[in-house]
Image (cartoon, rainbow, N blue to C red):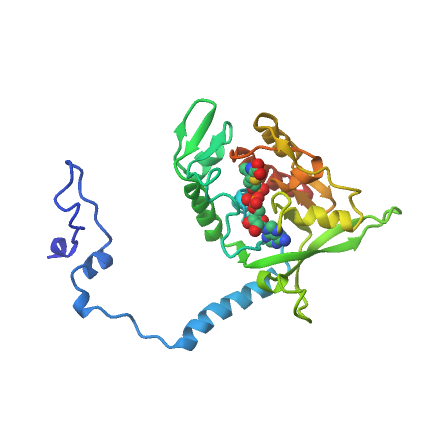
Length: 310
Ligand code: AHZ
């Protein structure tokens, strides 16, 4: 009978501690205990290749002209993408992430501990995402940082107007001269390459990059490090910033307000958020508390919509 088909995992069959047993959907239930007749639908290898490459090249084609490029898919970049993508499903948003795995430093709370702390009022962002947390008064705790990161990531990746290009590094910024006499520039997109290629410019030749044009770039590449603070360091070498303030030591109390409030357009066409901003402003780091990353992402999205004058 249909009911018999809906087999339950044996550990919970019959209910454990009076809890009603969970069920899987009908097609999956039908597979249980039927493995002897099991077989996948047929496939040819080239079909798999084409299924991937056709979509990727269509995306490269479509997103070569984007409305917004977000550089870095850490906690700030993803929070920004979620906010922008939710508010403006009409905008084409490319996220370029150097790592194979998006998420930056937000897969763990601090050191190698699992839980993620956010100070209030950043719990509003968790409520928005539907991420459960323990309310500890002035702060909240998500039981595993990966729960926050995987949730925001899954919501962003479902958005029709957002494409994540991971394993892809931003190697440079596209610039245009502005009309002002001081020789100012505006940022007009990003220069990209496969990250593995970017890492081999010293020992291989002729590996020119690719480009994405966009009237607005939001850089959230984290504080200085092998990959971090990319755009702001480039602003210095392009002489658009005299020098960086340099991230200061840890002061949890003051650092988070400074990062959220300071999230802004630094040169025309380039908004900087998250810990990358600490390198411009000489702001303190906050250590293992992530509320400022989420809300800096939200503010970066709001600043972006102002730039779009919408
Ligand atoms: O791989 C980087 C990471 O995923 C990516 N990235 C950096 N340079 C890039 C480039 N092209 C493309 N040139 C690039 N991607 O940017 C992401 C940055 O994520 P993150 O988690 O390092 O930064 P965040 O500002 O989102 O979060 C910072 C979290 C920190 S650091 C900190 C402290 O040191 O005290 N405290 C917190 C909460």
